[in-house]
Length: 238
Length: 384
Ligand SMILES: Nc1ncnc2c1ncn2[C@@H]1O[C@H](COP(=O)(O)OP(=O)(O)O)[C@@H](O)[C@H]1O
Ligand SMILES: [Mg+2]
Image (cartoon, rainbow over all chains, first blue to last red; front, side, top):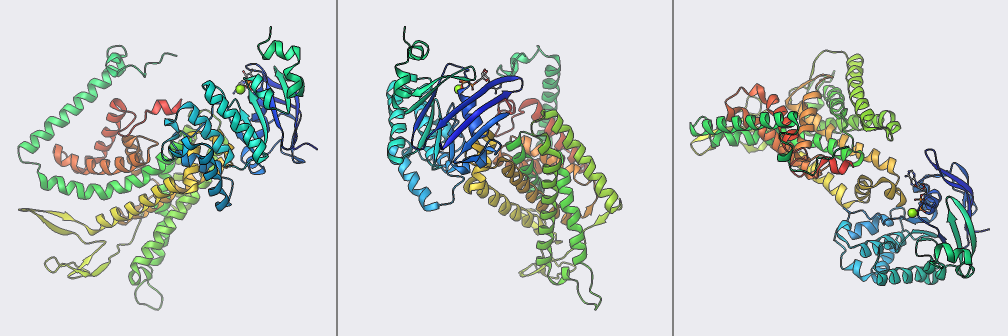
């Protein structure tokens, strides 16, 4: 049994049929990546898993339990944490308050304090800006805060939606290092959505290629990196 | 759609005849007020004494407005909705509070003083708590029954619902309890440590009567009339507002409120139960309104099912004046409106019964010249 199983889900926005029977599996301790062009349905997939846009049909099973119809805040309590597309930092909350919100569902005060120290250690730039409002941070700092905030939730599965979007190459490098580190050192299971497919596949155990609401290819990160069709469409091959 | 909000207001002048008319009318009113006020001051008809008198009275009245205004602003901040039924939430506090204080004022069958006379401070505190509780219950039911099902409906729908709920509550109280006027009993509270030997009170003698007493306070050559009650109301309001500020700024639930106000989806991704936070928001606002209602009724003793209207509209004005959705704005707006309302009639040489007209004029003028209020983030921007 996989930690997270998505079975044949269909999700709609009004009449728009965004996910048309999509299935993926995420094993414990893996990084799994979901790649695909703009509008393919990557964000919708993550939103369906975390309860923001529940599936009209199909099932999401986490740790053996059906979570398809649970409200988003209940799903968070089970340990699925979503760092959404566009970072979505609370711009009028301070850096510290943003991190505290990440730990909202937890009650283990001592451990929360330790996790916060850990986030500051990992992202010293955030520590220098503890009392600054989220909205005043640079794009890169906001992305660190978004990941830090997700770390504060002590995730079992971390859903990351385009964490490298709009960042300078050096920061992209840093973000990928952190993702790899979280997985390697903390054993956090990660479902990573990325436009930067090459990089994503290089750190992923498993990959899925999504096109207009359907999975078109899947395989190990390694295999997809060398799949001619994937190279052609997503890895900038000729 | 044509977007003109980013242009300066002067560009709009001449393009939109209604806007132009409003600017001119508003400008004329402001000019008139300024000329008359300066004239009265120059002629010595309005001086420092009158101004201080206005401030003392205005701060008490204004702190009541501020407490109610916070309810409008908190709900607006979180739901982007004007809860027009908030005035009835206020009314319910005063009304149910009446039943409590009325019961406390009954003389026991064995004779002797009533609970209210014997234990005045405790009885009043209990009345305030009853008022707060009544308002809270009404507000929570209101949110649950009327607003929550419409959360995703267009704004106009919840606006109309709010007005409907407002009328429904008035009628409900009218049918349940009858239309007759009820009055809070006159309560005296003699405070022995403060002696005012030269101004003897009918009930308390030389001791200060904290609730009913009126005292002359010399200001230079002249004097103003002060009621200790004004300061008590102001002090209680300050304590309540400070507590509320602390809750919103420092506690976990307060931070969650601010997160929900900013972005509900992302808040739910933090594990925040958005519905519950919205209930807490209504609850906080209603608690303040209930306390305000009982204090209001202690010095405007008549309670009716329709008593919420004027304080409600004025508190709404205060919230808009300070910038709706802005918490310090509601506090400042309330105090400012209270002062304007009690100072303006004297300053303009108009009868003090016209203070309601003053408050409404303030509302109209803000709407014309600065819809975003004093502390305003623009209304339109936060709605986008
Ligand atoms: N809020 C929405 N309302 C209507 N359609 C939407 C909404 N969000 C996404 N869509 C549509 O659903 C499809 C999938 O979008 P999305 O999941 O955001 O793709 P991706 O993240 O892969 O770029 C697109 O066709 C998009 O236009
Ligand atoms: Mg997307």
